[in-house]
Amino acid sequence: MRFILSRFFCTTVVLLLMVIHSQGQINAWNNKQCAVVLTYDDAIDIDLDNVIPALDSMKFKATFYLIGSSPVLAKRMNEWRRAAKNGHELGNHALFHPCDGSLPGRSFVSPDHDLSKYTIGRAVDEIRINNVLLKAIDGKDRRTFAYPCGDLKIGDEYFYPQLKNDFAGARGVTAGFKQAAQVKLDDINSYFVTNESAEQMIDLVKKAMASHALLVFLFHGVGGGHSINVSLDKHKKLLQFLKQNEKQIWIAPMVDVAESIQAYQAKAGAGK
Image (cartoon, rainbow, N blue to C red; front, top):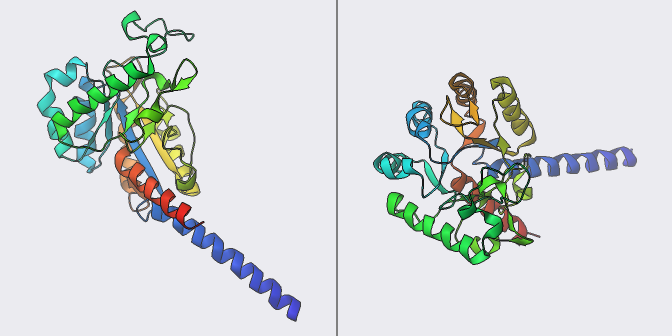
């Protein structure tokens, strides 16, 4: 009898700890099962023409990673300002979107903006200049960064460590699900959307819900406007699924989610 009670007690404790751990993960996601962040790169017309109206119709807020030198940023600055006032994040995608031209398949990289020819100082300076530009548009001090082409290094050296106090976090391009305690804020995982079906994108959301994880979508064109594209219909179906399940999913800009993760990790670290 004593053995049975002992086993029952141990099982109860284990289950209780599992519940506490699960609840802690959910609390990191604004008391919901998971977090989904919708991100859109490069500051293109489609963002303003297609994406923001679709998001606003669902009352969703997203992150737009803007290239400071984009002509769309210059020509439509008031529209970007309105988007920021409406709760969307204007993220930093560098001033000129420099990529490492020494890597295979990088023939599109211009010699003037070949990251492999940059110094760390130049990369940091250009990113900080873009922050000044973005603050002039939205008036905000906190935002996140997205690595152009997903390039983390110049030569063998990581450049983001010099910028970690400038941003709440940095989005990378490596796919993966992470719970709040596992997220690396200097290289946040994301799923690069290249014409996947609506069902495939929705399945990713379901997996994030089941694992209480962070899911970040990385879009470029939506209904055209970019060589990397997803159709309007597929994008709409994803948004509709998120809307139908928003009681279980925290849909928020990257800066809000990154700051929540940072607070969660700090609290978890202090409790060790």
